[in-house]
Length: 108
Image (tube, rainbow, N blue to C red; front, side):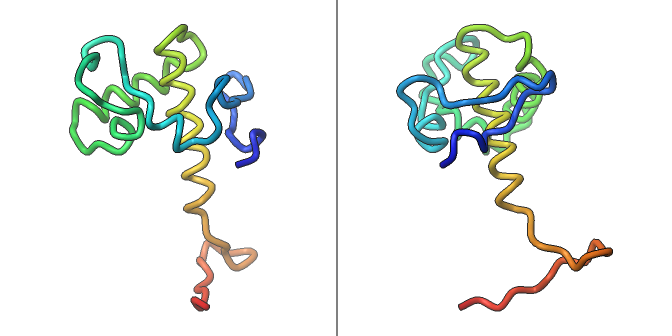
């Protein structure tokens, strides 16, 4: 994955992979090792995709903290924002110009 494609924070800070992290999947396999989720073997990706209300609220809060966060919270927050950017880009499908109508593509 192109390092330039990870998006940016609300304040415009470019998001890049942390040292030693090669892709979003690897970053998502890191465990949350702080706060109330410490010791629960909860990976960043598991938290991001969880349907539990508490997890969803926490993800939303973390994303809101991305520009002020430090340390481990910063790492998790940056991952969540980068994941949101990348997954949102992948889910976009082409539309017919001048409309919001999504094109239907034939599978090869």
